[in-house]
Image 1 (cartoon, rainbow, N blue to C red):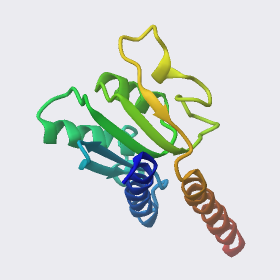
Image 2 (image 1 turned 60 degrees about the horizontal axis):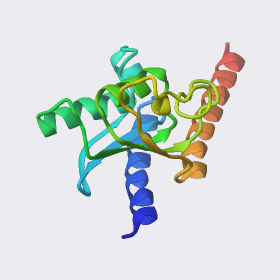
Image 3 (image 1 turned 180 degrees about the vertical axis):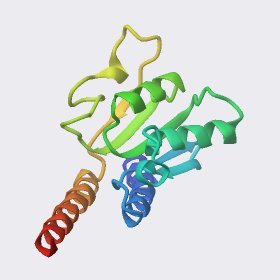
Length: 162
């Protein structure tokens, strides 16, 4: 596989994780971390399930990858995430020294890689990341659009029955 094919393959795995989140009523965001063409971590959002604000897909994947690598430095890895990371997740990516971030859809409300901030490429930090954006962006964005459309429709139906 060439680089684009690999990015699509691993983003497809992140989309599988996002679908798991959506099936649980979680915002459908998934993340996969790869080291030397091997998946070392997979995760999806669990905030509603855990009632814990920091159980974002990226943070859960980083924790799993650190356990699997036996190191907090995730050098030579690549994280694939279906939605542009928020400030908290971008910070964790920097702190764990992940050198390459690949994401699907932009996040106009909380995106801290390209949309609102450019945290991963701020040279005031001691670590920066290579970023590849818009990988399977339409599919990733559609997951979120459909999830929130369904949520609004369910709320509308609930109001009708009251």
